[in-house]
Image 1 (tube, rainbow, N blue to C red):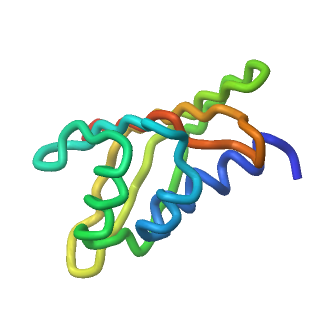
Image 2 (cartoon, rainbow, N blue to C red):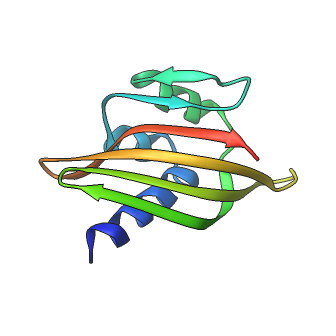
Length: 114
């Protein structure tokens, strides 16, 4: 596997996985910015919020961009995601990862409705 492949797979796992995915692969103090009502979340509050929210059942990531510099990677893309019983939502997203002992960790993520 390449770093790019690993990063895109990890990014997809955040969409489709549960709270344990967040707890096991986020950097300490990670920050996320979600559309209202979730808003700005940090650290353990992220996994707690995910545990209470309905999970996505599918996500299509297109217009993918990546900037990889040493131990930091930024991913940007358009996401079309679907939850059970809800219409598909389209968002522009950006995630920043840092490579630490044990692999890549999510440091920040933002979703902007498109």
